[in-house]
Length: 197
Image (cartoon, rainbow, N blue to C red; front, side, top):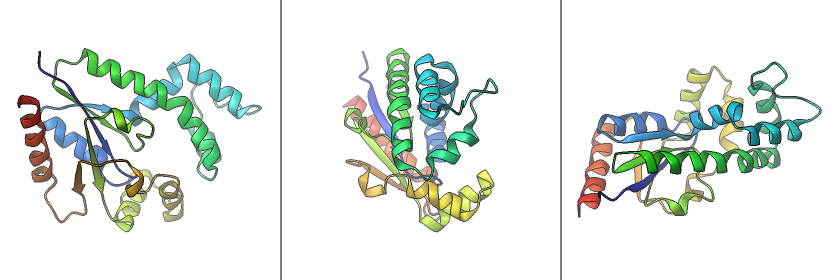
């Protein structure tokens, strides 16, 4: 049986993680988008729903039937302790979903694309960091999410700095100076060599 390799792609908001992951997908990798999975689990996983209701009481983030993301965002992005609590609730469930995806995948590597891999990074065989200058990240997120520069900066400041993201095996520069496709292909080829060695 072909050995399976667990790979994480990480980086701060606006660094271009999803773009890089989509290029890996073009090369045949399977991508597990952690943020999308987290959003899904926050409205389908009973453990998460009950924990969030308890955490935000007397406010009910599910009052209208769906998750009130604006309510949660307004409370957590200036409160690191609350953000940490939510991560402690959601991330273990996301991790379980990723490990299930690997187990059920027919491919030799499944990439987990996530802004935060804390307490999980040691389980990856390879970690890839996508980097971009802060000003470029702010501009990208402003355009993408229709946010002010100060709102984007608040999100950046609530994330880990790049030098806090564990032992990184590969760095992808996404400052629009180097070809992303060339960088991804070099890493993809190295991964295949590792799998086939």
